Length: 417
Ligand code: PGA
Ligand code: ZN
Image (cartoon, rainbow, N blue to C red; front, side, top):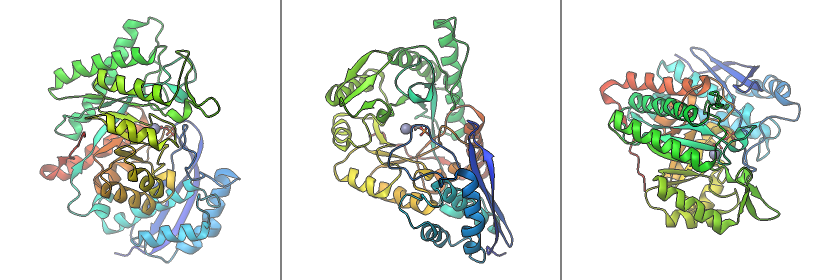
């Protein structure tokens, strides 16, 4: 067995939105790893740059000419060295030379190649014997905002979190039941609803925010009764996409209303209480740490999660944690580039008492690595959609991990604070 890297190969593939992306193979003396990069649509301003100016073609060239010559001969199990080398070759803070997605694909393919060389699953290679906790799947059921082209709610995502499930497969099935039921309710409400879905496989319907919440709440209640455990609601407002920096208002186009920061806080607080939300993501725009902190103080029993706010970035998290802005953080590895960067943020989050929520992107591939990262690094929640191929790839991988762990498998602790 040897983890010495023999070759690094890059190619152009497509994500679930049909956009070009990069896939990388890392080949060692006795193993192989492959990873492809996802892409977001409602991106945080502080995210790394996905690709160099020449796009995926230039990224592939960079792998061939700059990255592969440096990595060949190194040991794939020296992940930090591999990731440091990527930073050194790039030399910019936001990966604009190589592309953050190029770094992502190399970094993840490398981790898998190391695991594969040892003949063990990725989650065990990264997390060791003690890695045996399955995350709760947080899934998008109704889409709105920038994820939908036509008339839809202004809030970007209406989510389900099967917080009472005792196994991952039960949790995944409950989410699917909720998704299916919501589809039926939407059809009953609007004969013109034609079961259209967004990139993430969530329903797209001509309804308001409150109608979406009502329908989801009813579906969650019915499914909770059927499966005998609690399925809670969540939302992602992706509020940076609603924010008008000039007028300093959140613009709810569909509802024809504009809210200042105080009114936004009150609006979110009211719906959290009325619908017993367990999870609220990006309720304010990406620079408003203060409002995040205020809302976190005011809510009980609900996770307040920063996505565009933190962009998986250690420094931004540390800044936010000082003022207790939120109590959970979205981890999207391609917001920062490498696995090592993401792990640093996950560890910092745990030290600060924040819940790390590992997440897909709206444009994703059938790459399943985040499923293993959730188990390896004990992230109690994985946000990966409910249905649609790229989402199901992650869900099904966790079903396999649960099976692999057998009696040792247990659900993560889900501290809803
Ligand atoms: P994305 O958004 O389109 O940037 O992946 C998903 C999210 O906001 O959580
Ligand atoms: Zn988000």
